[in-house]
Length: 289
Image (cartoon, rainbow, N blue to C red):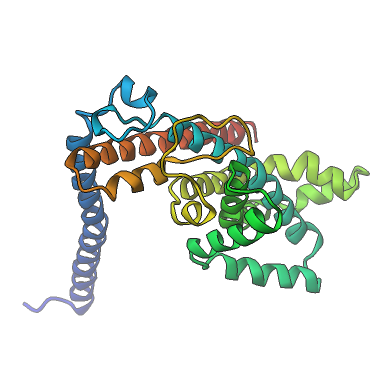
């Protein structure tokens, strides 16, 4: 007895759907498996080196005595300054583009430049920071110059994520504010921004995750590779974890490669800690909203 055509078609659709699911699962599991292998190999090299002395010690020419304290403190200062610069400026730019400059030529010009800047290689930002902040503005090779350079690097991420968050706020809320007699500024500050804040924090998380691992801009700006002191302010010379890791990887001794593996693990832990804090804060703001 022949099978009806519609049953055959349904069987083919189910077969294709099952194959597509397997293909999607493979596409997810393959990179995750490679990542797990890389992290596992990294932990095998790093676990014997990570201890309290490694975190509290200064760099040394002897691998067994070398530590990452200046790089760790420098990275924390650098990310803090970068966030303090990029987040307010990026959110303000997003508010202008979404709330004030919908059809203006200036807004169109800014949007084009933001789209172009998102695809610029990070080393170009380093060259820009070297020419603008280090030399023209005479900031020298300081934490502030590095933070300003990284702020330019992550600014497109913050602006685009903030604009998407502002678009999720219903127009009815704005109209309700205007009906109650509030100005546009009051509506934005008291209703729109609080509602969009969880999405804005998502952009901040992405920006921090990219900034904390950048090496090329800091090398061009002039971050030091061998530092035996802690930064004492925004104008202080500095190093960062990516720079210290790059310095150890470039050395041929196996002990320094183990130090580099330990530094990578610490960098990952710092990034996860910062992201966790941001995610928890975002979740609380979402509950309030």
